[in-house]
Amino acid sequence: MVQDKQFWTSLTFTLKYALFVTPCLFILAFILALLVNGTFRGVNIFRTLFFSPVVISMTCCSMIWLWIYNDLYGVMNYLLQMTGLIKEPILWMNSAKTSLPAVIFMVTWKMSGFSMLIILAAFQGVDDQVYEAARVDGAGWVAQFFKITLPIIKPQVALAMIMSVTGSVLAFEQFSIMTKGGPSQLTTTSVHYIYNTSFNYFKLGYGSAMTVILLLILGALSFLQYTYYGILQTKGDSYERNVKKTWINTILSILFNASAVLGGGHFFKGKRGDLSGSTYIDPSYAYDG
Image 1 (cartoon, rainbow, N blue to C red):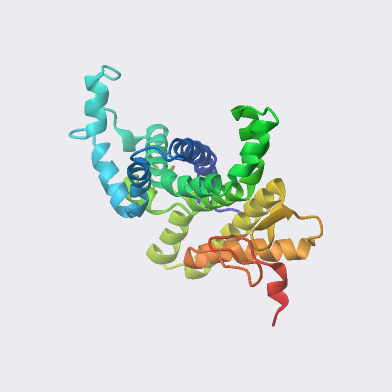
Image 2: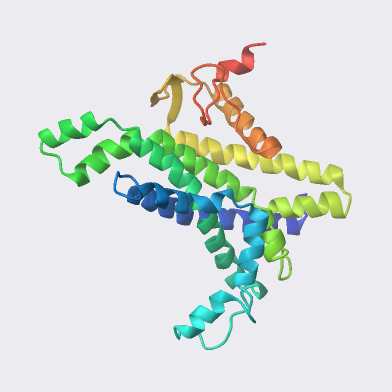
């Protein structure tokens, strides 16, 4: 595996894709959550519209956007030519320089609604009395946002970021359908390469070994994010910075979550202090027989 250049090329491309798509997706989701965080007329319609791409399968989205990016009859080239931004149609999927931004744009359009929903729920979970007290003390909306809102919604932000990074590292369908790993295997993701190795070349053992490496990478990325945010669910709806957690409990928690994503696409839920949608596993659950 160390001498397999294609594996490391695909892994590098996967991390590059995750590095670019995660900020785009999260920034758009945050903006959308701010826009629909209100009680104005028609707000539910906008929430539905922003979330609706999420319910479309990635396979269908990839095929739709492959048609949009078509150089002969695609809508994207037509609009760009009509506005005078380009003179000739762009072959979006024929170059790694254009195919990667094209896929990132599609994934951002499709998945931002999911992160928007998480952040919107966090916004609406902040008690209005906290804002009223801040206004009495003379805090403006900027101070309220950075001093009150952001610290309170930090656990939900961490959840959205971790799920976004994990989904990006496990990218498969969009590249398999839209670029087919080309040109010259430059847009082959790690999962795509593992799939080809396991089921096209029938090297199941080698594919399993690469899956374990990907699991460890996901665990390391999740660990870094957990460490950066420093937040774990403790009891009920309360969150606090963890200071007593041991290294072994942390590693077990991260590996359980990463293996759940690789195995079933869902996060395990802790035995104690469990919340719907929470990514934290109570480390003591591992020792409960």
